[in-house]
Figure (cartoon, helix red, strand yellow):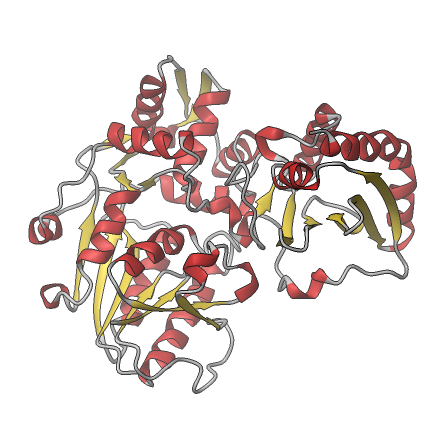
Length: 474
């Protein structure tokens, strides 16, 4: 069966792709930027990738006519605090127009549980998209999920950050709101289970795990699963804005996502029926089991996808291709070179840079820079990296974005997402003479950019020199 997957480079899409391929389907992925589809080359060789921006006017003939089923996994909640609902509506209308020129019989849409009478803007937008998709020339199957728990999911990572960093928490009253989390493994089972299942056509289903918990109970259960205790004091005086800043500074989430999440956390997200799990004979995992499965994947370094690798986790918005050519004029640079004896071992060190492995020199200085970046609204260092030794174009790497990761050419190129009065690149390359080249390039914006560069030049002398020597150690 020929299946279209939109949002293929998102958290859910990256989990769904290998499952659909394992089931023997032919996959077409529609993404905004093909260069940042962070999948293994074995998966990339089995799929067709088409560049479509569903926010832009429809381009006839972009999609193959013989698409039979499509997954709609697009959302814009993290990109804006004001008009993401309008963007999601436009996306849904354009999606319908594209599908009109195919033979698609079914569209599967992953939404959120919308049973509360007073919906947040986020959940109202999901419901609105559902209504727009019902207008399309296809049979629609809607899966309304609760909070998704899995390695790399935004909800799990926020809970993890809060519990691991704060044994004692003073929290806003929304932590007493009830919700019904679901394991990512079960979400994928439901998404594949309804595929071409006529009993699910033109209907909407709630999908959730068996446990109804408050957010406070979820935090306590996480701590219990990890073998420690935490204490939570609830106060009624935290406004949504203060709550959003609280999440932003403590966790790895972006401020825009934090603000929209807090808005939604005031609403109960509880399933009303179990029709679909009865129909598909799926018994969802408990919250404790979901946590255990997540940490098993983390321990085995098998985290397939993370919300942090999404472009919305940082300030980078343009196509990666526009920045791969590092400018040579009007820039300031720091160039370091070092002869190496074992280039394969050094290449491995390059591919392990950042995250828990650190930056090979002066990690405390990098942490201070990350903290200062967070204070002025930047991404900071908390995003880390998804894989300990794998990098793909588009991946988040602390406060950098991977532009190019070519092991055959022995070259890694990063673009800075920290807040700067200019644009910055960091490149690592090993040439045919076994020489390691490390180049930091900065394109300043005006006088403030130049003043910034020269003010940190003394630190560069130690940091960049120490970093290349650390990388070269084998």
